[in-house]
Length: 141
Image 1 (tube, rainbow, N blue to C red):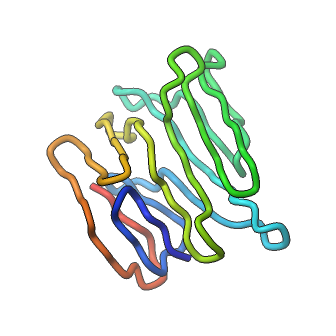
Image 2: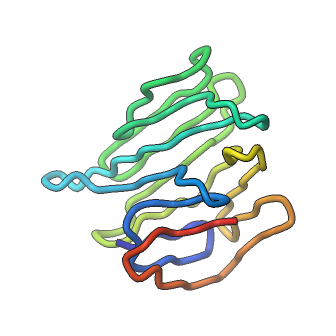
């Protein structure tokens, strides 16, 4: 499976995205329906967990501050009060998933921002990269 993160393409990854050395997002497809299934941990700037998603369902959602809208081809997680997009994943085709928009903290408290053109954490950013993960994880930061 391949994933686009901003304008960066990571080929042949195993579904796990490590951010600053910590597995924070896992993406799979349901074997019979093809529905995108996401496991995701959301932290605040101090590294405290605010929400946890398992198989695209919020299992922990402190103060009900987040909501998830999902279809077979899209998952969208937002802050309830502001409407800010935390995480948006779209199925582009049978082999490619896109993380085209998002803004959330890493477990280390750094802000990760994903736009259509790049991803960035603090002063580190990547744009237009193509990388073959060779069956392994995608590492950001």
